[in-house]
Length: 215
Image 1 (cartoon, rainbow, N blue to C red):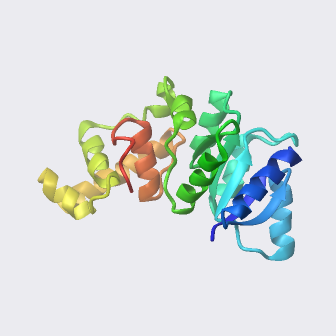
Image 2 (cartoon, rainbow, N blue to C red):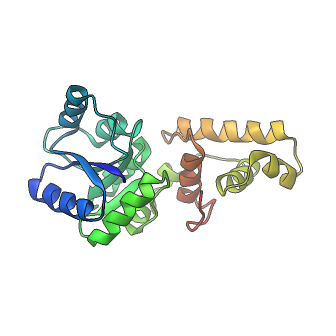
């Protein structure tokens, strides 16, 4: 059972999502209008963080998408649930650590599917996510070398680093150093990738790994 938090300043949206999620067998542990409210609830109840947080892109409390995602993404998988008509803000959310975007115009089954995917620790790949990244080369350009791209392609697609090294005919230490440099370059452009799942998402964003690849 996935524990889900809903943060949206429209009560009707929260009520509809909560009903659908509970029908699907998920546990809605929190619904509220802001991240501060969620954090206060957690502190007061000593509750564990939700597995997945469905977060509205723009809340009515003056907070920014970056600060909201950063507050949540360290402990939960954050899905932006938005009309997705502001690509720059969506890109900002993805750069801050959100796992993907689901449009408020999407069928409920798509939202439920996104929650399932995020609960498994996997990045989302959908039209809203792709359109937010498409055409924004500043977002996608970490200036990786050809060798770094090749190491990332194999490693992010699921191969152990030792196998990557063997396949490329390099030492394990060389492959490891390449991955370290890749992570540093993504940090430098504001797109950190501390885990292998994060590296897969970056590789998908940059067209290094096909969008159908699995972690």
